[in-house]
Amino acid sequence: KAGVTQTPRYLIKTRGQQVTLSCSPISGHRSVSWYQQTPGQGLQFLFEYFSETQRNKGNFPGRFSGRQFSNSRSEMNVSTLELGDSALYLCASSEGNGVGPQHFGDGTRLSIL
Amino acid sequence: EDKVVQSPLSLVVHEGDTVTLNCSYEVTNFRSLLWYKQEKKAPTFLFMLTSSGIEKKSGRLSSILDKKELFSILNITATQTGDSAIYLCADQGAQKLVFGQGTRLTINP
Image (spheres, each protein chain N blue to C red):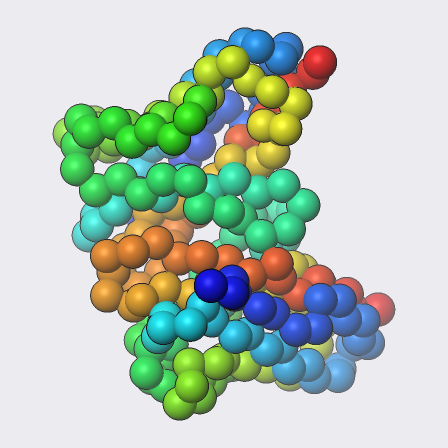
């Protein structure tokens, strides 16, 4: 079974731009969660989608948004990029029923210049 | 607010040593506690603990949960250089994981 796939692996943007990250979950997984990892704050929860609906959201500004498609693939968008948005963005998938663990992709490393 | 605290934050040992990593949690709606290992990229899943007092084991790694005292430990016996990584514990609450700061484990040959 293929794991969680995230694209692109690396991205360099400048302040003020916007970016879209993509995540394909493990086959059969209906829940996709997004996390931001930085050296200072560690791993922080952004949001979770299940069957195209956002079920939970972390404490991030409205510039961070996401969506999920009918095939469970998910995208995350960050608008008006700031230097502090430089981070590793991780996507995780699970069955969504709270029984099984979340499995992570390799992440997208976003650098803001 | 849910909180997960790991200790120590950093640990350096020699190959062959046994290590114990700690994780305490304060959460309002506990469901399960998870351990992950992170090397350079994705955190990889190690254990999921839901019941108190039942040890989960995989090779040289084992973990146990104490729901009364709100903590978990991860043990690694006969450590190898390949065990060098950041070990993360997380509470799996309502559709999200709340992570601790992680323990950076370094195994010297």
